[in-house]
Length: 117
Figure 1 (cartoon, rainbow, N blue to C red):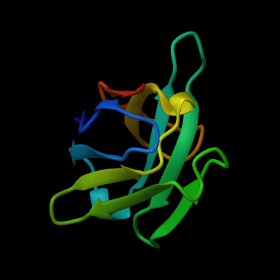
Figure 2: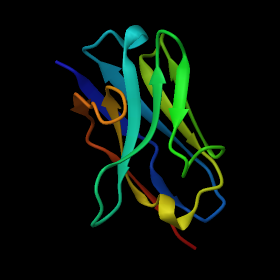
Figure 3: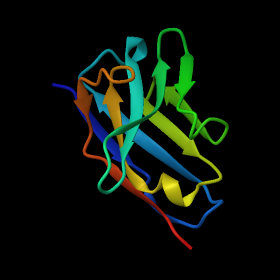
Figure 4: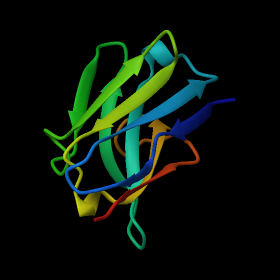
């Protein structure tokens, strides 16, 4: 059974940074495709970033490109999302997912990120 447990969310001021973590188990992490997605109140699920673990390729939504960095630790089976220069519009619940953009097989329980002054 795939389990994904996110952590690292919180309240941050505009321009601040946060690093999200997702501890994964029950899958072949080193060969998986992993994504971060987010959902703001009243809005649909939005893809943020993906990483193809085997090749190391990374992809980003235009809205976060240059500010967010996806990475992973194959030893710890953990996915990360480093978020810099956070904006009000980044406020959302963030989820890690197994699968590429739009092809999510499993999602974690989410971690809340709130950007507020």
